[in-house]
Amino acid sequence: MKSEYKDEQLIELVHENNEDAKSILFNRYKDKIDYLIKKYTIVAKTLGIDIKDLNQEALVGFTDAILNYIPEKEASLSTYICVCVERKIKKACIKASTTKHQIMKDTLSLDYTYDDINIPLKELIEDVDSDPLIKITEQERYEELLEQIKKSLSDNEAPVFDLMILGLDYKDIANILDKEAKQIDNAIQRIKSKIKKILEERNK
Image (tube, rainbow, N blue to C red; front, side, top):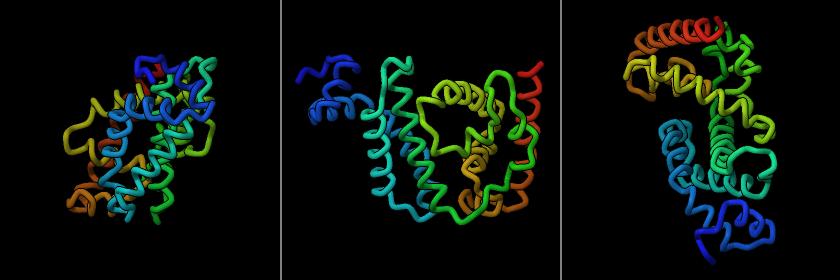
């Protein structure tokens, strides 16, 4: 089969149970999938998730994406695959975690519904069961906001934030990063302040 086939053509073949088309799509987006797996590797290991299981979750997410993708919805296949794969990985991490999502639940920035996203940031972070096609636009806007937040963080704050949005508390984050709990707690407070400032600026 020709690897230069367009995504839409390959999706049609996938719906006809063509395994070659599935393999071509997987190889085409393997780098993006590997990036998402790497992004959650440290957290997954800390939560007791074997790397093989993490890869399997990613593969399931990829399969879900190509089987359910609808080109007419105007979302790119690349974005849709990333949403489905990350949602599957994140769901596995949340399921494995025994901690409650408490870190930012009382933060204004997570509960406030801002105009350019039209949905609370907390809901976007925690919602792993909704239809990705419904959430695709919000996800893209959320990624833009997330990128802006990350650019404002120091090198020490960035890994703390990545673990915060998974719902881990400051003690778990301290253990993962091999830092003092008080040091992590202080970093969390600084991060909250920066997020609030960014959202206030975006909503002026």
